[in-house]
Amino acid sequence: MHYGFIRSLTGIYRNYYIFGQVLLDKVAMLAGFQSDFTFDFEGEEYLREMENGGLLISAHLGNWEIAGQLLNRLEKNINIILFDAEHQQIKGYLSDVYTNRRVNFIVIKEDYSHLQEIRDALDRKEIIAMHGDRFIEGNKLAVVDFLGEPAPFPVGPVNLAARFGVPFSYVFAMKETRKHYHFYATPLRRLEFSRNLKKRDEILKTEVEVYVRELEKALSRYPLQWFNYYDFWKLPVRTGK
Image (cartoon, rainbow, N blue to C red; front, side, top):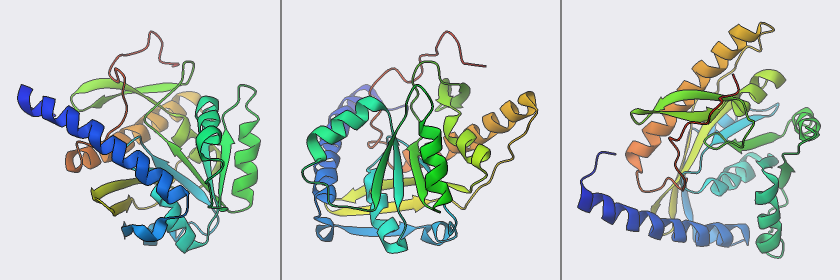
């Protein structure tokens, strides 16, 4: 963000502090204390257009679990895509307090059986939600300029939307005060699933760039609420291309 040394140091401390608050808010909301919080929903009308299901792509930014509040209003079931390690952690510390029966977890598996679960959920006209700012080794990536430096992003989220032919929206849920959150959703987007591999790669990379621009826009407004704690700009040896 081009902060000076002192401002950066202060910003790091504030970032950790806000992260702690977000974690506590997350547990409180999942435990059923939603009425203690207030929300603004900007772009709700776009998600109401997902009558036949769709995909929400977010980031490790703010507190995306409040999206469940909006989906309760829309009376839609949500299926959250998780890596196996994340799934085990959630089962460990939230299984006793989780109260939102509209939420289901789909775990990414090495045998790709999760793709059938995603298809089944979309056939039921439900919502799929996942992050677009983190990848695991072996994922196909697109290297895109992010905050002035090239960084790797997975193409999987936008590829899913194209493959299943469903609309998608980029969504972010940001903490604004102690008990108030602001939810943002972009207008619905659709992607062609080209049978030409080269053309498909070009389409997917272009859409990843759109996602990154939306992520940068959110970060410019909430620079202290990005919670990806690793060397994000370290490029892998191979990008899967």
